[in-house]
Structures are given as C-alpha cells and as structure tokens.
Image (cartoon, rainbow, N blue to C red; front, side, top):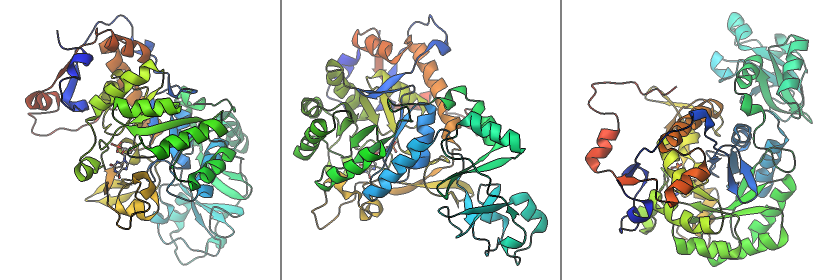
Length: 492
Ligand code: XMP
C-alpha cells in the first residue's frame, strides 16, 4: 500500500511538505516514549530538533537563550558588525535562565507620559542615563504609576530607590531563593553596570512549570549551546575569530547556494584552524551539491532553496527545489556519511516538522515560525487590530542594505537584486510556551508512524516500511479545515 520514499521521489516531480502524506503504521508505545534527541551537526547534540534561523528578525541574544533553554539552538545572525555579533553570542552564553522580558529604561530626570511607556513590562527601570548600560538606581511599577497618573512629575520624585539585583550567572533556583528572601516580586539581572534583564516571580513560576527548561542544551564548555552564522568572504575569517573568542559552539556558512569554491575554501580553513569547532555548510538541495561539501569536511548540511516563507529565489533566479524532495535527496547522501541535515525553511506547522524529520532531517530550522515570538528581536506593532512583529528575508533589499548581501554573493555587484521580501507575522507569545506544545504534537505524529525516535523514523523510511503518497489538490483541501462557516484555530 502506498509508495516507498525512494520510488515517490524519483518520478521527476519537486514535492514540498504539503504535497506528501505518510500512511499510518503500527503503535506499540505511548507518546511520551518518543525521543526527539538529535544532533544539529556531528558533534553538537540537542534534546529537541529545533533550530532558529540566522536572520536579523529572528535570532539575537534573547532567542539564543530561549532556544538553548528549550534544548534546541539558535544561530545568531551576522547582519551586524563582528563585535556586535560576538557580544550577542557571549551574552547568551553567560545566561543560565531564559531571558524573559525586554525591560524599559528611563533616567531619573525623565517623565512617564502614559501606561504605554511600560511596554509589556510591569516595571520601568530607572538608570543613571536612562539606558541599559548604566547604573541601576531604582524602579517605578506600573500599578504605582496608574494610581498616581501624573505625567508632569519627574521620575526621581516618586521612584523606588533600589539597586538590588542578581548577576546573570544566577540559575533559576538562586533567583527563586533571592526573591523569597527579599520578599520581592521581581529582580533586575545586572552584570558590570549593565542591566540585562528583569525577572519576575511569575516568570520563575512559569519556567518551573517546564522542568526540562532549566537544563537546556549544554555544550562541552558547561554553558548553553549557541551557534552563529558567517559568510565566506576574507573578512569573515576575522568575524570567526571574534565568535570563537565569544565561545560559539557551531557556525553555519550562510549562503543561498552553498556549493561554491568560496564555501569549500572556508570549510577547509575552519577545519584546519579550529579543530574543535563544527561547521555547517549550505544551503544545498541536491545530492551533488551535498557531496561536494561533505568531501570538503562539513559537520552538517543546511537544506533548502527558495522554500522559506519570505523567499523569492525560485521566482527571481529560477533555481531551487521543493523542500520535501530536497530534504529527502540530500539526507540520503548525508546519511551514508553520517552527516546531520537541517531542513531549513517552509515550516509552518508541526506536521511539516514531522515530515522534515521523517524524510531524513535531524533538525528543522525556522524563521517565520519563531519570528512572532516574544524572544524575536523588535517590538510588536498593531495592524488591523492584530498584534504583529516584523519579519524580513535576509535577501530583501532592506536587509541587504544593512550588509546581508554576501549571502547572495552580490557583494561586488553594483545593482542589488532582492531575493526576499519584508513582511510581518502574528504575535505568538513566548517560544518557551509554544515550542513544548509543538514538540508534543511532533511526538504524536511519530507515534502514528510507529517511530519512537528520529533514528527509528529514518530506519522505517529507508527500509521502505514507511509508505507515503502524493496528495491531490482536493486531498490537500480535505486535509485542511474546510466546510465550516466559521471556526477558531486554537491548538493549546
Ligand atoms: P521560513 O519559511 O522558516 O524560512 O520563514 C526561513 C529561511 O528562509 C531563508 N531565507 C531566505 N531565502 N530570500 C530567500 O530566498 C531571503 O530573503 C531569505 N531570508 C531567509 C533562510 O534559509 C531561512 O532560514
């Protein structure tokens, strides 16, 4: 019944996740017996197969900390100076609890104009200069301000003076004990006169509800795993130096077409000079491309070309591949060489994750799926009554103007050609909340397939035990929500 992957993917069609569907197999274990432990690259193990994309609207310090806390990893983007990128990596690696807030700062001589000044935070922190990088003097709580509601009065007239803080090296238990002892509802996290975060009692209680969070992905250095992206130009060797000093655990060579002499040279440079550092090559979508990078010595492969939600590469350049086919084909050669594959782009639900992993990937890399989260860079805005966050392609003109054109090897060209768009995604809340739910859904998918781990899913696929089919257009409509006058889409 159905087809083997080998047969299905050798008929001359380029399929994406929605085109294909797995046939259910036999269940002889509970959902919780499913293990999602994996590797993002040969020497970097993760406890969940989730990776945040190196994009400037997705992965900075906050996302890196949260993904590591969840047992995944984020790659801090390189659309910034080498020292800024390295500082983000170092900052993420210094943490021991997921960052929870984006504190708002004011100087004592300032005023609070309205409750909106508090943003999402119940407190405004008062520092000498009104920025994060200056001495902490005290705070104003939103409740106090609302009771007073006087925008004429200067902050120093009513702020609570307090420089109580904890260092970023404190773990959840230590922060909890501090709040208990001081009978406090929150505490700022401060290192060297820089306020890094503000942790509330509520946050501590919430994290305690996810017991696995406190452990997270820990590297051989005993600290959280953090990745970063670099390009393949000469100056990227210097960037790499900065990142290595900051303690980066793995780097990805960020390119839309990774099978190039530039990338092969960079892989060789890294393997020769940084023996301890894993390097992921890509992006690739064919067996040929993958084999070239494997031969050059990569520790992981990133797969996808034009499948991302903000991508226009296939339209602009006429090259790419349907993501299901690309993941299956590249994984088939990577598997023989024991190189983990990252399925990058096109993930918009847990079913896509199940498909990517079963077709041979070891992890999924996500952009739009994470960009609406609290942990993604940037502030929420409102559009037609909806809370949204900006999300842009690294090949969009806007991002390339900031420097990301190297990804598209367009650095020497006078005319920049966009291969991506600028858009926005819906507010999704914290990744600390929706990723655990998504992983539970993935486990249920694995259970239906009779696969109790990624390895067993790959084995079922390769032994042709796992069967699949292509869905017609009508079958895809049937597989989605249909025929209702109205509905509310809520998964948890
Ligand atoms: P999702 O679907 O998760 O995709 O939003 C994220 C992935 O898309 C790639 N990416 C781009 N591809 N033009 C492209 O053709 C772009 O401007 C662009 N920006 C990101 C990248 O692989 C990312 O992980």
